[in-house]
Length: 474
Image (cartoon, rainbow, N blue to C red; front, side, top):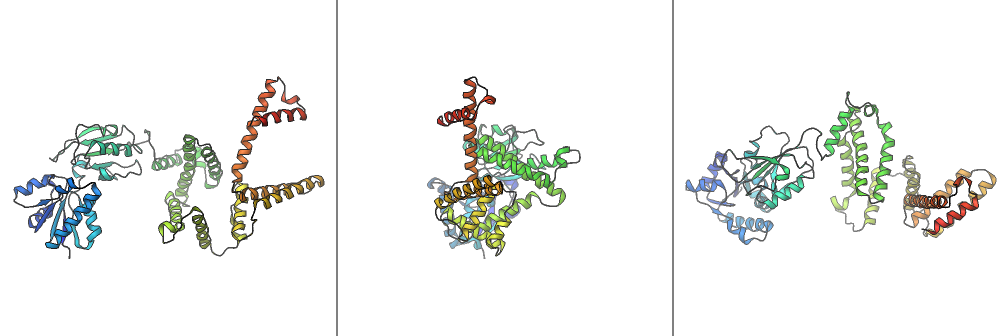
């Protein structure tokens, strides 16, 4: 049996107090209001309803967490003496109520009422997908839905909300600001998101209603906008090229865009990286929209697959595992993968690696698979001796004119092994070596031009001289 009843007072006007709440307030054996700074308080006094408040705790508490804890303890003490009625504006978001539920959930009954957003949304009815919440707990994840902020108590809080909203909404998005007050209908000022923290006055009775821009004429876009654009391009009257694409025809672009994004990241060019990662995201969304049409997959299927995988393979976060290092996490990930895939042999795992992987990366993964079953060198110098051995076999193949390609491939494979044992990424090493060659070659061309010579007329010895000069400039 509950002995604490939480009563919703609503937005402040007595006109929005429910009949059930009024009856509960008038019949309460002991009634505590969270604060007397609520329009219903004066109405209760006029009816002769007695009550206490927690206003004194506001001054003695260091922060809101301390206030919630102290208030919950006080209310629980009072409830030991007699059934308690605790009245707040909105139980669903009240921190003291949430703390009470944590401490004594089975003893608490909540009597709901009119939501704090009601007076504000009444000024703009019919908003679909409305996101309503107290300004102090604003959480936004896209710019698709209208947002209603309640209890916009200060300019500082308004500024914090503005910064969070500007991540998803344009600064000139329409904003309805509701100045301090509780009388109905509420006064309202139409302005823009940019002006949210530039209003004359604020109080806990203030609110704001943000309306997102419609269409594509805006500066901030999210994944939902990208989906809408892609669906438009794939429509019967859309773009002929986009409509023609299939999962198979798009596969090469995913690989190309991923490489370009990786390069931008390696250069620490973050503006370019955002642009290139956008191209990668486009490919994922493109496949999702093609999948919607053909029944192969959707964006929700894609996100479900990867989210489920992350949860299953992070048992130290979502389970009882205790792992303390990145190496332990990596080994545990591999163990979980092996368990999911069954008792495949090392050879079967190697065979399962996609042949479309970049060749150096595929070689690296094959070698790592061999390492996990104990087939590996202990020292990179042993792998380096294998490089020399393979180089000798390449020289022999050149002499005999047979199996040259095969032996050169073995040389590459041995070089990848050496890099791996040294803890180096062979793809990155080859990229760096290629960039170094290009830099030296450009310096060499500049020197040839400075000497007023033509590269087409140089002998091998002359090329060698210029090359050595270029290397010395490193």
